[in-house]
Image 1 (cartoon, helix red, strand yellow):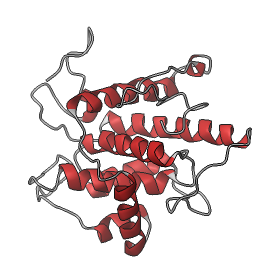
Image 2 (cartoon, one colour):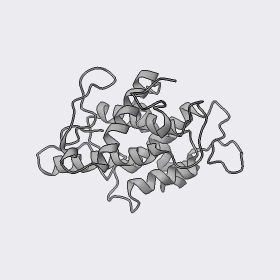
Image 3 (cartoon, rainbow, N blue to C red):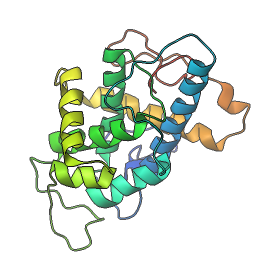
Image 4 (cartoon, rainbow, N blue to C red):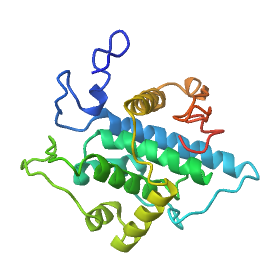
Length: 230
């Protein structure tokens, strides 16, 4: 396992892993960090769109209004019922960023929920379905693999819509689902850094950094006043 900075003997603690790589029960910190990153991105993007002549790309992931569940509640619901590995939430962020880059769209309150449930489902299928996965939040110890109808129920949409979202997502990604260890680590560090900013003062949260994306083209992943995705 890779070593973190001084004082961080295990950089994957936030994913629910101990020093030996074993899962710990309970809600991992990645859920709150991911929620904070997505919320900040949505707020910044909507402020940008409202104050400029930029037009967002409307996709099948856009709803007519934002869902009643906030992002933190939605992330917790997905974690509770989908029971995917915790690392799927990081991979889901990577998929969402790839998707938004390819279609040149912005992450907003009208699209983030559908993109999240779709990306988590695709990540779980790609990463978890080939192994017998029993996680600490499986109280009965039974290993499960869920179908699209189940994910649709968790996400609050119909099975037919879930099927359409999955196919659109995969084709727009050009079925590029593989994530290298290097890319995973970069995004996980970004989530920890940017998600942690939510707990700092208002002045501290005004600092946005220019970071290269996984392709090295210099895309802004987190400066939400300028960037589209994360």
